[in-house]
Length: 293
Ligand SMILES: NC(=O)c1ccc[n+]([C@@H]2O[C@H](COP(=O)([O-])OP(=O)(O)OC[C@H]3O[C@@H](n4cnc5c(N)ncnc54)[C@H](O)[C@@H]3O)[C@@H](O)[C@H]2O)c1
Image (cartoon, rainbow, N blue to C red; front, top):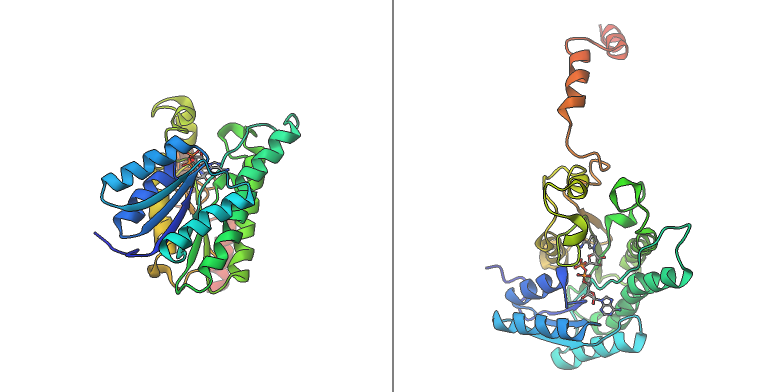
């Protein structure tokens, strides 16, 4: 097994669930001294139990609300006191409320911005003093393809992710500023597409159901993502393998953005087009051929 994080202090936010639980297990398996935290206390404790049962080193702080600056300090100060500093900050924690731009309650909008954007900034602000003297220190933000323009974040033009998408767009922007401000600490963003977790499974549906197909048909790789897909990218970016990579944004989305959500070629469409053009030169290419003579 790779050992890329031997004795590195890795703080992961929102370790009670989903991708961050996978991250805690995988960083610990590669030798990291992991510090986790979550607003959901029992969930954070369960991750701590799982990592220790697998032989890893972890301390998980339960009942931490990272939208409160003193709470962010509690986590980062704990990591520094317990392990001597922070080498990697994995900004993952997020909570959000759904709602469209024309109907959403302003309190729900503000709550979402706070629980996506503010907490990522506050965690970083409070981790920085414990990171700035560490060789090879690195931060990864988890964005989302919902934060990238050109679509709403859900298939079918649904705008329920309105506030979430605005906040994730700001997270991506914030990371690019921090890459400059905090250098030589490296700062990168991973933006997942739809990832199967306990929370999202009911939303995406089972393979074969129409909503599931709406997602999958927009991709180039024929499946919904798994937490490991995101964690693998984040581990590369925070490891010494990426020691010359900073200020970058990587979409881990099965090719959703790479195809603008159009997915793989549809033979029902491409077939007639190919037949129309097969063996014929277009007017422009005929002209080029003549000019090239
Ligand atoms: N799952 C997907 O399809 C998907 C797609 C794109 C982006 N993402 C992003 O990936 C990351 C992980 O997603 P996930 O599906 O594993 O999420 P999740 O909801 O399963 O886990 C997020 C964890 O963060 C914790 N948390 C939320 N607010 C907190 C706060 N204020 N203080 C402390 N902890 C808090 C939650 O309690 C939860 O345990 C998030 O940033 C999410 O926006 C997920």
